[in-house]
Length: 397
Image (tube, rainbow, N blue to C red; front, side, top):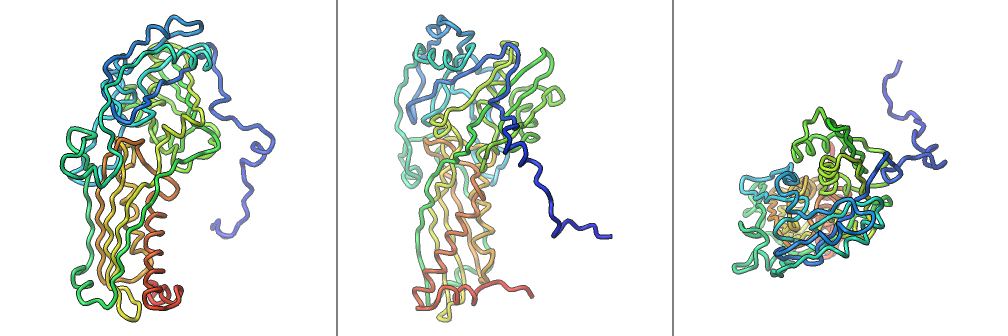
């Protein structure tokens, strides 16, 4: 009797529900007495918050409550970074709702809770916020220069990491061919078909959170840490998820704040993201500058590879932000033989939305870089691109 599943046909479980409209997305969920929350977000990339007045919003029809970041300062904790990649890493506090300073466009500064999301959205216009503009930090190279405006007090370098194998200096010494190239991995926005949605409820003692998330178990643990709700009194449910691509592999400000709101108000609170809001506040992907040097013999065989990355972290380190570019370290040298390899990466803070995992999480970026270098090597030697790859492939022994 065989016990293997390899080669066996398996009927997909979800197709029937999807095709007949019997799925259940987070935004479809309702609870008796449910309220809806909408967030006011910063229009500025970098500024001090000098005043927030939510009193006007509280007076409008249908509005149940309105809060600023200061109202939650004592209980909102800091969004977690779970991957400290080096001893020198700087993980700044990351409040779910900004209290004294905003560091990217779209950062939440206040919220309105109302009987429906449209009244809540209208009430945002009654909130008054005064900002003192600060210099934006948008370019990674500029961010690392002396005298650059600082995103955080400790400076703009989040971390540095280095991996070395073999004698890199010897590999490049007297190499007949040295290819030196710089590639830009552009910043992008994960855009799942289903925008994010969160619903939180409490019975006064325990809490339930429904979220369009890829990581319900991790989310439960992290939310317990951030909010102080004991883990055994917190249940996280992930209904059907309409795409994620890494964007829902996260512990988000809205998940934390919905829990805090339901704890404070004693009623279920739901938040549903708009598409434009998602473009601002879903963590972004990639945003790297790759500097690659490849040494090879006249026969096209690789002797050594040097990789130097600048990786844009954005304004904060989210769940696995610093680890994403380092996942590529094992991909640059994954399938080609080489005598020596050096990988270095510097994480840089900028006043942009934080980056994090997106479709392959660092590894597609690395694959792009090394494959471009193989094409460049072939062009330099006048060889067929596949022949150069064949000569360098790591073969099964």
